[in-house]
Length: 357
Image 1 (cartoon, rainbow, N blue to C red):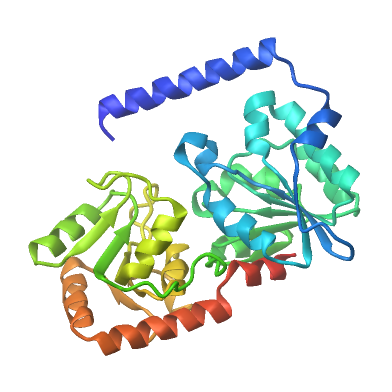
Image 2: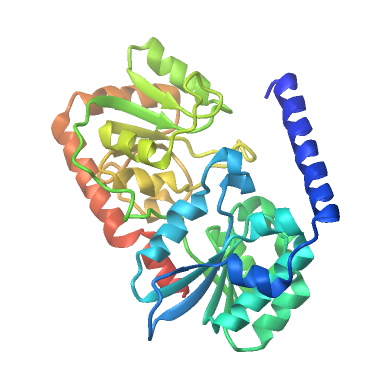
C-alpha cells in the first residue's frame, strides 16, 4: 500500500473514531428494550422450528463503505433458505459502532431471552463481547452458545479467553481444533464451503478462458504477468489490480459462470508463506467453472486431484496446465462437472451449519 493511501486510510479511521465518540457523548443510546425491539430482523417465523440468534458482521470488515460481508452472503443467506430454522439476526457491529460495547452486550442478552432462542451463533469478526456475560449465558443451559472462528491461524492467542465462554467453538484449522480438544474445550471442525443457494451454474455461455478474482499481493502479480506475457487471456479483478473495483456478489458469480477456468492462490496477505484452504476452493467448482488452484495442505482430503480440481506449484506449471486445459474442451467439461458434484454433495454451508447446530 502506498504511503499516501495509508495516511488517507488512517485519517478516515481517525475521523470515524472521533465522530463515533462525539455521537456517544452527545446522543446517548435509547433504552436497551427499545434497541432490542428495533434492531433484530426476523426470518422464517413459525412453530416447531429451531430458533437461532445470528450475530455477525453485516458489512465487510464492519465497514459499510466496503460492501456486504462474506458472512452475510454465505451464512445469513444459507440460514434464510433453511426452512426449519427460525432466524433472528442482530447486526451487533453496527450497533456497537453507534452505541458502544456495553449497550450492545445488554441488547444481545435482552434479545436472546425475550425471544426464547435455542441457539446463539456468533461469527467472530472482532471481539466486542463481554466475556462474563457469555459465560453466564453458556452456563444457564437455557440455550447453546456457539462461536464460529475465522483467521484462527493468526488469532488463536487473542481468542483464548473468549472461547472458554461458549458451549461450542468451531474452527476451520485442524491443529487449532486439536489444541482446544486437549484443553477440554468443546471444539468442532468445519471447513470453508460454498453457499449453493447462490454459487451455482446459471447456464451462461462460458466465453472467458481464465478468471482470477482476488487481491494483488505476494507473487500473484508475477504469476498473472507471466501468463499474459505468454498470450494467456486472463481476466483479473480485485484490490490492487487495474480492475480494482469491488465486484458485487452477483457480478462475481456471473463472472465465474462465464469462466472456463478460475484461478485460486492459497496464501493470505497476513501469512504469505502459508498455503491453506479457502472458501474460493469450494465456491468456484459450485458455479461449474474448473478450479485451477495453487497447491495447499489438506486439499487432497476434499478433492480428487486431477479429476475434480487441478493444482499448480509454480508459474511454469501454471502456464503449461492452462494451455493443456483450454485446448481440451472435453477435459474442462469432465473436471468441472465432477468438481461441482463433489461440492454440492459434500461441501455446502448448509451441511456444515446443520452439523454445528
